[in-house]
Length: 299
Image (cartoon, one colour):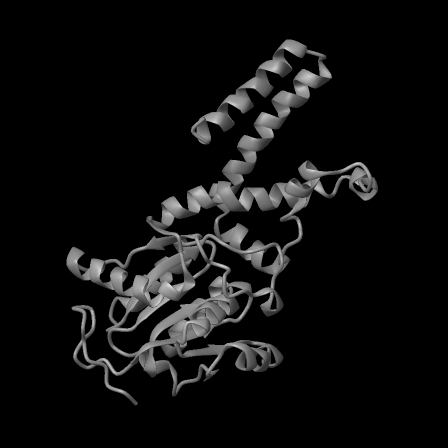
């Protein structure tokens, strides 16, 4: 095992990881795309996946080997890319194996619950946890749809580590950016876990709920020949991993329920205007939505 020579204040003298080596827990769409992006730039990447067939395929395409208890202490970066609860359970099991100075991140779509548990776990450990959410993906899931360029130009939301001085926190974040450089993220946005979950309930989760509910109309079954861009845009994320999104929705239920309530109230106004034949009211509602969109886009 190589002995790391500290080049950052965040790297203790007893760090034993191999610089730049990455371990990824979960090789689905996001975890697998991390593996491909890092591997393509010559990084050593090790992975774990519940399905052995997927792991063996990943070994052929983008892994240097399996992420086991012997490899974990040699990783400078560990990526939690499984479902939220499973990721926390795995981190709790291997916490004492992680090398001093190593960085652990998650890539889960909600932040409060996983950051709460992982920050608490890291508090008495010599390694660092950083909450992360890459704002990229597709409506497909699984390793078969992974891409090395999945994150090129995409934003990365970061929830910084807690209970440390500003200088050390900045050093950890700078080292993380260097480790993730092969992924090609376009920007890094710092956030708190509650702020992330509140905004993401609107920008991502609500869109999935609306799309998934929209295709339940009986009319959807006869759309062929009558649909174009609007239908495609609104239904793109109706296809989803039901188990994963259920866990994410319930973990963020307070914020998501509030957004659904706002949408229902707004839709009711349109419905009332249409049912009452109130052209003036309907035109006002439509014009107001148009104005909101233009303001949001800076037009």
